[in-house]
Length: 216
Image (tube, rainbow, N blue to C red; front, side):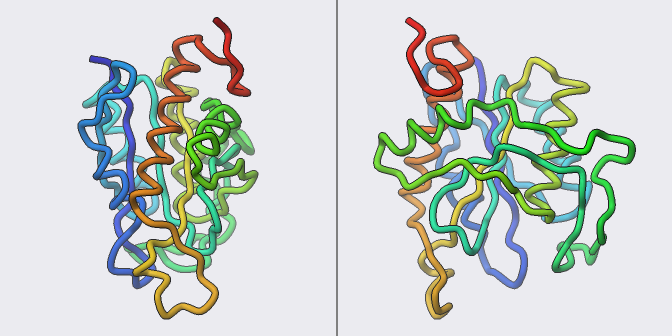
């Protein structure tokens, strides 16, 4: 059976959980349009996150890779458009790395647009009553590192794979006691991921265009 790989990060920044892995775990083994969802947890560590993701790609040989990460201030699920070749960490990663303005890939292009149909995915998520939008900045921390790094991997080593990144808000239990911090229930995130994956598969199959319009 063809596969879709979803990854979620380990906790970081003093949090006890990472909502990305909480939601991604719940997707494990689901079958969407004859594609099995396979998953993996990756470290919040510069370069190690990309090594772990590539190992998962080599193991599962997916058609689609979607990395999912926490964005504590996000109001909605954010489907990222672009990854930039810049590591500029506001806090250290889980191994103490804190690069300031360094390249993700030395001599790599300045940026990569993701190859996922981001507008079609957001359209499907909104149609399923999930708050979601296209985002034009994945930041410069580990989420962007992985967004850019996986885009580089697929461009240079796995051109048949569609890849991209989705940011999600805190869980309610993470936002509790943090004034003004938005949150989203894990079940809602899972529903959003299901809609996003469905749109990505339909695009891969040639059923819809990048805007989500039917082709048949």
